[in-house]
Length: 304
Image (cartoon, rainbow, N blue to C red; front, side, top):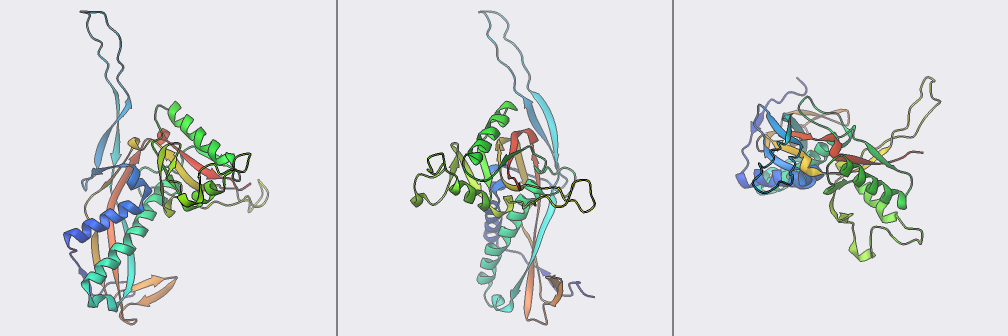
């Protein structure tokens, strides 16, 4: 039957290779570089969250000291499977090290980018998995000081909610907007000279760039209230946040399976691996994410 693996073998990667894949996934994900990792058991985890800090007060000598308890709430984190299948030519089978190198180089990018894309502008795979899709947005229109204002507004709003921005997840598209941003005297707002080659910090906090952060929107189409009308959706360029309020967990290492007789669907066409002298590797990780929504603001670009 098409699509059924008739000769599939689970392969056990060397411990150092499996660890390297996890490390590379973390490097490819802005969220995993900014949020705090925790150990996530297969059954899920209930995480205590401090919603309010205890309060200190002044006391006279010999008087009883004030007692103030922090306000605690709970969040449930559950792991969901994130998987990808990548086909290879059979030449890679000649050298196991070459195969491992390809696994390490190809698979983490798609896993890390999909993890980010789901959280920033996607749909949660299920309960116990938070996304920031509905976070309040700061909108830029064009370039220039609009981007700077959006960053400052995000900082102010997050501080007003009781948190502090300590990092930014940005898309390559956001980097382009920032490189174009100028003040009223046509001087770059975010770079001092071309030799810097990038924008590693914003408002004193670190910036991490990954493709998964970007979410393409669309312009308004048709007439409101009429059939066929499509409302405008802004592009998601980045997220500012207090990343002490976010946690991600990986249940275990990377699970890898290999097949040379499966049939894959590639670009809506059925591809038989045996027929093409190819094989495919399926890699999956079980991962979860929780966050406090008020500690984050999205930076979006209007389609006006």
